[in-house]
Image: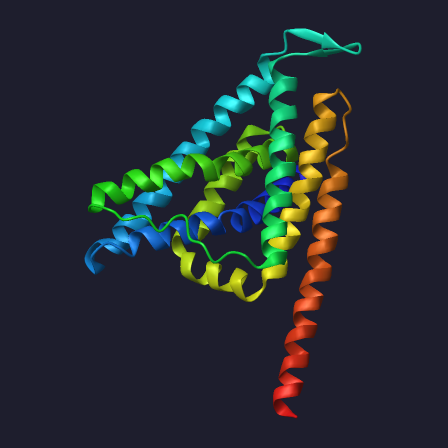
Length: 238
């Protein structure tokens, strides 16, 4: 039971941080709507993201658990659909996380690929639905990498999406003020991606190591945030 709770808290935190790009995209696109439709568009967009992520989560988890018939063998290791999904998913997380960290460090986030002209409410929702497909993959692969309990994955995704729906503006502002949290989450995606690759080669790593690393680093970062806030307060006062 304790492992379920730890997995749920860890995954919910990562889902919220990873969902910031989704919030930013939804906010940008819905800003093109009339004021009377912005809130409705934002809510519908995030609801579509939730439905799509649950469907993708169920289908991928089912394939990982059930499609285990060996398709081919490489250097004595058998590869089924499960191993292929784990390998490709791990490589995807490694590549995407490294690329995102590079962009953050180089501070080249000036271009806004999501700012596309829209032709009304329906056009906005279609854009959100299409981009949610892209934004969902790292989220779902992170869930599969952290736990094999489908109810925990779905619960974490639902909680994270509800929090983003209710506090979308506040959450985005908080991460914007504390960019180290996003770097921390991306660093753990690299760790999770590496773990998925190893699992694809039949090397199992206890997930408790991941949970401990996440919470220890998060505690350290919370202390750093409080220290930076205290220093800023002292400098302003002095």
